Amino acid sequence: MDDFCFPNMLNDYNLPSNSENYPKNGKRPLSSSVPTIILDDKGGPLIAIGGSGGSIITTATAQVLIFHLIFGMSLKDAISYPRLHAQVTPNKVFFETKFDKKIIEGLKKIGHQVSNFFYE
Image (spheres, helix red, strand yellow):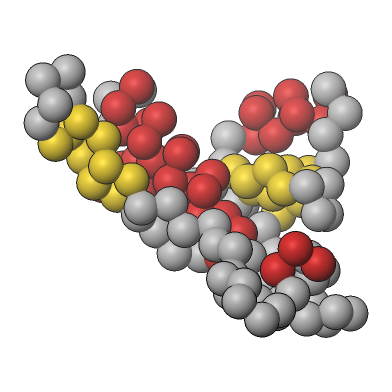
């Protein structure tokens, strides 16, 4: 997602523009930025995380948090792990080449359109 979109133009990630993000007086740009602070059960800081990468920020941040906090990966390994990203426009699931092939095949079997990430 770009700061602003313009009609009939692809953004920096070759995705179609979104009319909700066209410039307009008094309007702020939509953002996929997800600065995140997670607290422990006593209210103390557990992790603070954010990311860059346009439309993949939200799924990348969620993936890192899940791999680190739920699956117990080191933060370094969770950040380095290949990405999987589902998107509405186009309606595809994108994956990095090194992502687990069994998962990709499973997604295909249940009807998902899958494609390598467009930046690879």
